[in-house]
Amino acid sequence: MIVPPYLSPGDTIALAAPARKISHAEILPAEHWLRSVGFNVFYDDRLFAECHQFAGSDECRAFYFQDLLDNEDVKAIWCARGGYGSARIIDRLDFTRFQQHPKWICGYSDITVFHNHLQQNLQTATLHATMPINVTDKNTLAASVTTLLDALTGNALSYEIEPHPLSRTTAFSGILTGGNLSMLYSLIGSPSDIDTDDKVLLIEDLDEYLYHIDRMMLNLRRSGKLSHVKALLVGHLSDMHDNTVPFGKTAEEIVADCCRDFDIPVIFNVPAGHLPDNRALRMGCKIEGHYIDNKFIINSLNHE
Image 1: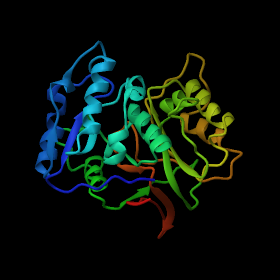
Image 2: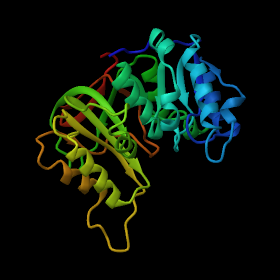
Image 3: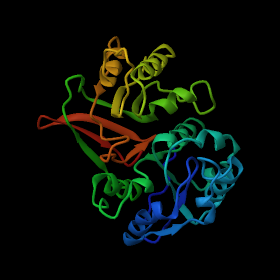
């Protein structure tokens, strides 16, 4: 794996919107925070383009993102928000100059497209982390924001995981892959599909029906994505919906049931996903979990 250079004060972080549209007001708290901790911030008017729900047409979003990939002065690209749209532009992008000068691509949710595409095709690490849409003037000291800074500057990341009755918390170690479950499901069979063998797989999701969680987990199971993983990390499964006739299981129970035949660690309550406690994790880098003083700790390491 190629790990992009870590950042230092004075480096430039660019803001991009490869999916849903964003307004200037929505990114201002994040911009102010970045400047307050010593970084330069780059974006131009294309960041605020609009085409229905998207941040401009596919061509516009791809052209702007391409400029950021090719700009050697930009040391990280922080995606402003998720939504939907990254998959519509990923095949339009040329990563030739990016490979010569790799940089951190940061975000979560729909940005899972980039995490998986870069790991599978370019063997390059990325950063699963909060996004500017989530930053406010009042939460810049929250773990979701401070761990983003730690991750970008090369500090080790260590998180205590709260117990969960469905967890199988045994020690594990491996390269982290995955992200948003819906996006992983949609990428299977595409050039951005991931190889989960001997990897630690992270999943999280938002605003899905329980039967759809079951369908996606069954797909991961039947397609072999769960057969040879080192561990499954389960982040937030937020705002789930049920039908008039109840499905009969929680989202967490669905995940646990799909893993019942695999002798692997399954760790719930991982602080990643669509809740305020969304801490940074380096995708494509080594992650490990173990007990220390009766507390289960995961460490997202700052090297391969």
